[in-house]
Image 1 (cartoon, rainbow, N blue to C red):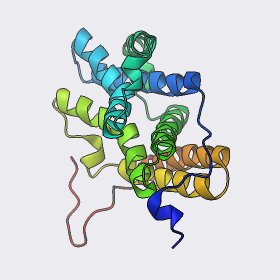
Image 2 (image 1 turned 180 degrees about the vertical axis):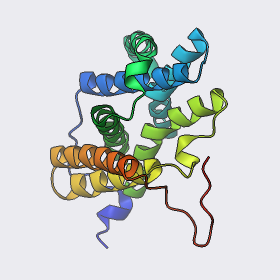
Image 3 (image 1 turned 120 degrees about the vertical axis):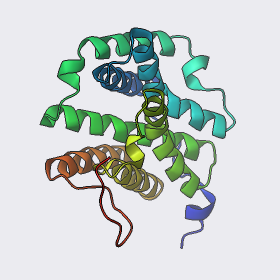
Image 4 (image 1 turned 30 degrees about the vertical axis):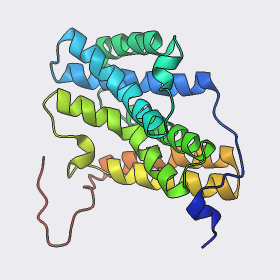
Length: 219
């Protein structure tokens, strides 16, 4: 195996523009707040859930890397996130759907968050396997916290559709392609892969992979 895959030596320092990262996180706050309101969470709880979904994973990633979380170090991140959460809550009946466009958009945003998390880890010199893990954490950890806060079992831990699987595949693809080929090709591959896996798994009702001989349970 190539040694660079073990020690995490990046061959590119390219990153997504800050405004692009903010847009991805803010769109995710909209999905988070919309889902919280669909569960009848009160107003401030809904906004807080949206912020957790949008920014929580990135904050955990930054702390694990020993960095000041970008959501609090750049002053306009939280205000923009609050606006996104309010819009998500107001438009929840439109956002929380199983229509193709909504599922694909949410999947693309999660794929982009995977990219943001993994690339930041690579740029800080983290081993590449750690970068893969941090990509998944960036896209999922805030949602897990919001699920727990609203009294739900975390989606990523359910026998649901391919949420966890899509994030793992997307993060792995991004890291491998970004260090061997091209950053932007890796970003596109991650976004498209996560979006398509989420969409197809919902359309065909694929459950998350489970242990052999374990009975499937709807949770």
